[in-house]
Amino acid sequence: MKLSVSNWCVQRSLRAGLSTNRDFIDLCASLGADAELVYMLFADRAEKEDVRAYMRGKGVKAACFSGGNDFVSAEPAEREAAAEKVKEAIDDAVFFESGLCRVFSGNVKEGISYEQGRDWIIEGFRKVMPYAEEKKVTLVLENHGLFAGKSDQIRHIIESVGSDYLRAVTDTGNFMLVNEDPFEAVQKVNEYVAHVHFKDFIEVQSGTYTSVNGTQYNGTVIGEGEVPLKEIIGFLSKKKFEGYISLEYEGDGEDVYEETKQSFLRLKEMIQ
Image (cartoon, rainbow, N blue to C red; front, side, top):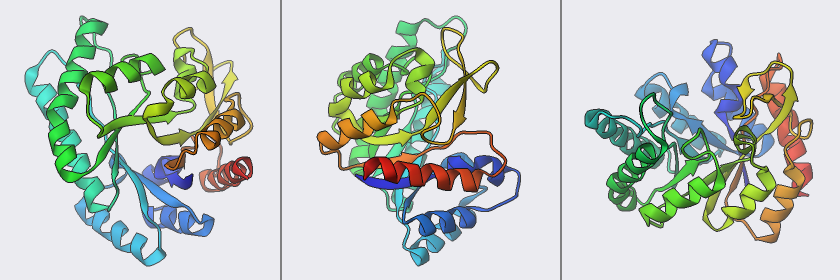
């Protein structure tokens, strides 16, 4: 297993202008970790060029480039635009010299059934797979939302698209938002897992995230929540997983850099 840290861990600091992506890369270098990069945390192409050069100087590799797309729309033009977003994210993965690109399925819309939305998602990925295959970038579909939140939904989409360049990124926290046990879910999609988002959630009275049954959660430092992370790490180790375990801290503490560091050190302890 290889270790990386997502700049989403420090997104509150980046968005508030309290730090830069260079600061984030410094953090990765100090931890001996590679970096996962999220599309919305870059201002423009110039910043991407600067960060790529800075990463090379620091010896930090890009584990994955995370894009954002939504194939669920009744408008063909919007579905086509979503496909173009995926292609742009593939290009960014190539630019950062990563062979992985995180993708989404789509969000629930009023008047669109689950079956129709699922079919548009499958159609959308079938359209972009030739481009991913040409660029040799594997798309990793995140368990996120109601169209691809559960392990069986992820499996269905991947198997329906039928390309070795579409695999899964299992988010250890997101499964809880659809009331699926994360440990059981990882086992169910194991054969398709190419990337892992490693996070912890804790149940609260009023939180940032709401599961489908109304339970409220907040992100927290690794090891302080309710996700069975040690069991997941043990399973992946047993299966000789060789991809990235990418830390994605989503807590609301005051110092996101320190909490990200604490989370990463706990992740290393779990692996050892």
